[in-house]
Amino acid sequence: MTPLFARLTVAGVGLVGGSLAGAVRSARLAGEVVGFGRSAANLRVARERGLVDRATQDPAEAVADADAIVLAVPVGTCPALAERFRAHARAGTILTDVGSVKAGLVRALEARWSGVGPVVGAHPIAGSESTGAGAARAELFQGRRCILTPIPGTDPTALARVRALWEGVGARVEEMPPAVHDELLARASHLPHVVACALAAAVDGTQVDGRVVLDYAGSGFRDTTRIAGSPAELWRDIALANAPALVAALREFRAALDRLEGAIAADDAPALEAALTLAQAVRRRLGRTE
Image (cartoon, rainbow, N blue to C red; front, top):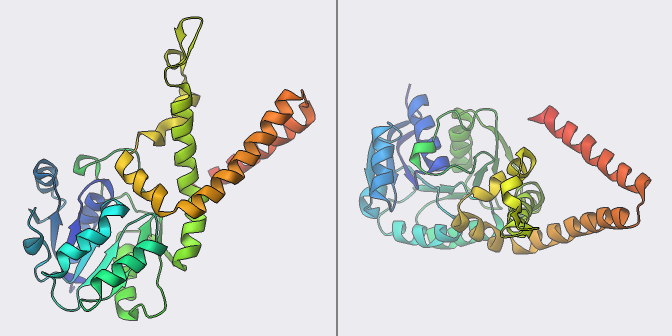
């Protein structure tokens, strides 16, 4: 069977990029998978684990004759990286990404890739707090959503090929406008991360009667703050790129927190129980969709 791409370049072979590269190789969706990155050590791990066929730190070598390039790097670095690649890419090369924020990024990539080839925004909703090629696993996207964010004028053939790429690695693909994606993910993904970081920061360094609070942190605290262990650079870029939607989500969260605080301060058992019961029901509904 003819592969979907003769040569696919994955820029950034960390958890998501490395997992995609490995999944593409396993499914034989590309004749060759080329990995590009800053860290020679990480690229070496990617080669040793068989995630890529070749690995390079040279942008010209990375994108030479590539049918498609996947930007799997922090959102804030994607536009500059596209600019570096454009001088070396052949005409018609598809540029896509895995970024968690879409509206501004798609506009920026369209501007920098103009005259080279089509741009298709993509966001696989999969990952963990682990990082690097050593954490990559080819099955990461099995059964997970991947959102494509075409805009008016997106090349339909390129869109179909990027859809086939993600479906080929097991993802459930859907499409929506970039702005809708950003509003949804501000609440479903970005808000939980900021809340986890705030909780970790609120407790850090605190003591009660000379005892360090973190020494008594149990599984609840660990579970709630798990995602705060994700790379700071990555989440800095996400938060700033999606600032308007995230700030709105934070205000909604603060209002919910204020209601809980008010019920506790007023010793309002019925109101508190109602809020806790609602939260319990939401968590149970979420459990049925995992």
